[in-house]
Length: 480
Image (cartoon, rainbow, N blue to C red; front, side, top):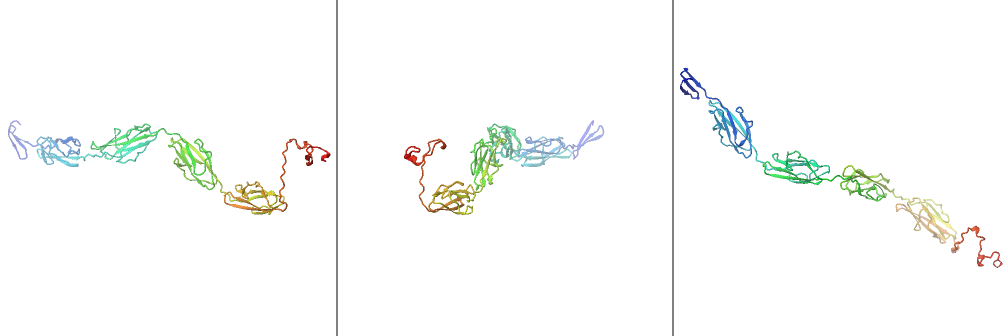
């Protein structure tokens, strides 16, 4: 255009220029550029995705403290106009404050109108975070070894735990109640629900492990502590310090180094319990394979008559491998006999009538007048029975003491008591001594011999008359 002669603009904004040199009219159409060249949000919040003129839909997240937001749109064409949620805004300047509720807001509409009336709309959906939580609690807390005491509860902050000597380190796994809270173990951040790093343990009680939870608000905190005790090295002591029976006595008497014992009980004892006491309180003990608490009685162990299988008392040391077995063989006596019979009965003089028979309990016997006493020899059928003759105990098979006899009838009672102590049988023997002189013969006192010479070498035997002469005078007429 060399020499413009005139300019005119119609109602649509189209510009007409007269070009006289070229004998023509130039027509200039208004711009249709409705793009933005920039879009930002107050408070430093970022759009997602990053702004591009050709992307029209965005999201953004702001803190709970952001109760409102402004948007600053910049048009690509300076002749274009722009509104935010219907309110005109000068390109490159902030809109008015747009109130935000907690949660998702919008979308907020940014409409650009080009010079030619073309429009383009950009949208921004803003999410305002909820208020910051003050929850600094744990919902769970666990250890890689041992168990918490007391059991974990959200409101309980102090715990203890015991671990074996072999546990030289431990990890702690805390789980926060609020996923927005953070947690540290002994000052080192830990992801909720995952194990901390290994924490070394000394033998004995260790310093409390501190688990600190910081709430989402960044100021509220709560500290949980766990005091871990590591056991000393494991004992290999598998000995008993005591072993006793509910009935009967051990033979030999208990000694820690003696492992084999016997015991006898009466027939009436059909079961027995054993009380073992371990030397090391960390050891465990079983009786015939059944665990028993040290110092307490085992369950009842049935006993058969006679010798029973050895009862095994096995002690396992704290180390879990060292064991020692003690045995107790219990003999239960047979049932007590009720046999109160005699298998034999005889007199030192005379004969029983009728002849002795076990089932016959009444006898008679006759002796001459010259028999002034008699003994009885009873024999029990059961050696465990006891015998009394006229109330005096007599061993089976042995003669009783001498029983004086009067002329006429003399009753003698032989009482047999069975092993059971209650069953008895009385045998009656009536001895009749014949009539005659009732004077017992005088006792003859024979002086003890003083000559050790055998009888064959002592010379002739002296008679009474020789002794009356006061000396030995063989063939003397004065002593004839």
